[in-house]
Image (cartoon, rainbow, N blue to C red; front, top):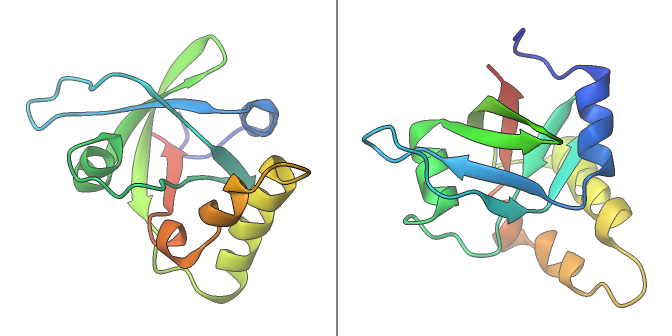
Length: 128
């Protein structure tokens, strides 16, 4: 893998309602796959959590810097970079991607996902 998302992979991410992600425990074993909302902004893929728990997928993924995702029928190892200190254009772009994908009538949950608390949990995923 080149460390970049192919156009086909990015299209798959855009079409997915949720991405399944599994972080690694310190002993290298995978945690169970957890469905999370996922967005694409430009050539990168981002995930966030409502609940910043250090014991769940988010805590293990951000601590280890690695995870595995299910992309269609394939599983793919990804690097995980904490970009929760996003400011300016990148934060706006990721927020806009969440609104575009998950917004609409009856979708109050997206407001929570673009709030400051959730935005601080933003992780960028890149193929390894």
